[in-house]
Length: 260
Image 1 (cartoon, rainbow, N blue to C red):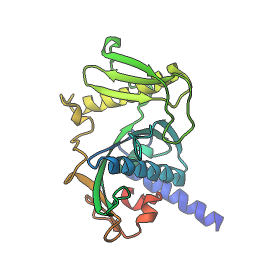
Image 2 (image 1 turned 120 degrees about the vertical axis):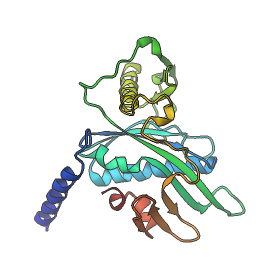
Image 3 (image 1 turned 135 degrees about the horizontal axis):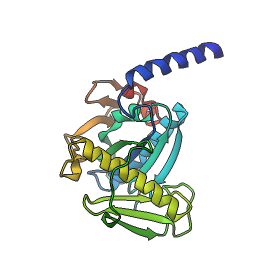
Image 4 (image 1 turned 90 degrees about the vertical axis):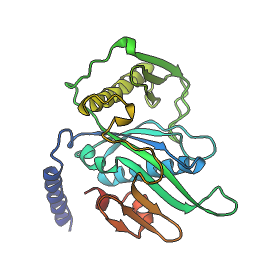
């Protein structure tokens, strides 16, 4: 049985290699999750998506590097930025780029009313070291602040957290996972390099909203996937039409049907 499972894994690996043949598909990926419309509910939804991707990475055998996932006021997270290290990680996670919509009974509403909330997922490749975008030192502002812990991860108690602001575009990147300011600066610059590369790739779009092609507000009508927990249970991908009633499995990291 072990030999059969190994053979199946090898066949799947070969199939994926042929499917994901665009530039950077085989490499690592930077994922950012931001709450959209829905207030506290959206913060909680962002946290649910964050843990869904962590479980998916675990199932895939990918290494997870959480860069920043600060706990929000009330419930959930303010945002999350993390890197997934694994073969075809970027090629597979490209399918998650966009707005994700959740429908459920609100856990914060004493009247138990149905609530619709949104979160946006941004996906960027980790660029090879030989690809560099020209970044002027005068265009970057670094701020150092006290780490708050990465969304329930181990808390870094030193003043090593870094906030990078790219003045011309308004891009803001925070990183507090590493143990030194220098390491956090290096990671923040790596993410900035990827974001600016995507801007140039999209014909140097003037608007920061076009970081990855056509970027939509995380709100009604822009979603790529719907997750319905009430009055029935279903997850449906708007683009592919793939759907399942096993919502718990999807939120537990079973995403292959939507990604592959």
